Image (tube, rainbow, N blue to C red; front, side):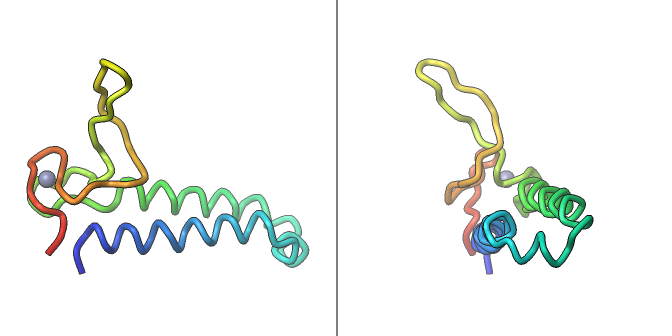
Length: 94
Ligand SMILES: [Zn+2]
């Protein structure tokens, strides 16, 4: 599996987890005082997913990409990395 496929799998599972955790009241009812600490943990896992998946050639996070706002281009972390690494232009697919 390519790093991009693994990233999108982790991203989708994490998004579904975060939405279910916020929307299903059973979690808050079961966890009581642990509801907020576990929410922080879920957020930290999300940060790990953002920064943890790295290009195998240059070891830069695959989510770090140049983004264009009108006439300006800045580097930023996106949720949707492309098919090629923005730093070394190698393919992120196998
Ligand atoms: Zn790279």
